Image (cartoon, rainbow, N blue to C red):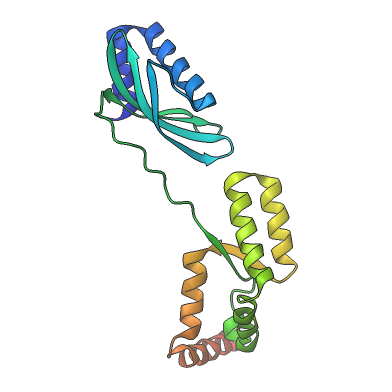
Length: 197
């Protein structure tokens, strides 16, 4: 049973006021990141500056319950888990998507492979690593339109765009594959046919 349904059953059994009181105590504990004699925080996950998940135990009416609750501006308050003491699995946050940089021109390796080679050399430069690392940090801890605009413009000045690391690595692997030159010539030949048609 999911946490929301289990908490609804708690509210049906103990009343809506009890549900409100319990959630307010959890929210206060999440804000201070501290428990008390009737509430323990066992794990605290910071998803970003505004979003957190707390796993813990809370006592109500002499009975202990376990919880996993998310709070923040992404989803509001979400009850991931609610149940008897030690009966709720700890929250496991998703791994954040890591972004890398790649050429904005998606056909660069086909049309100008020597320039794609320059891009591969750039990847070894400190400024390149800093541009990628800074974007990932800000995207995680200070998400928003201004962050995205700032870093995308900075990358764009060098002819680069941000993309998930998997996509960047797949593009590089394809360029470095033994069949790349053969595939490249076939693509150029096909493009020439399309232009002639």
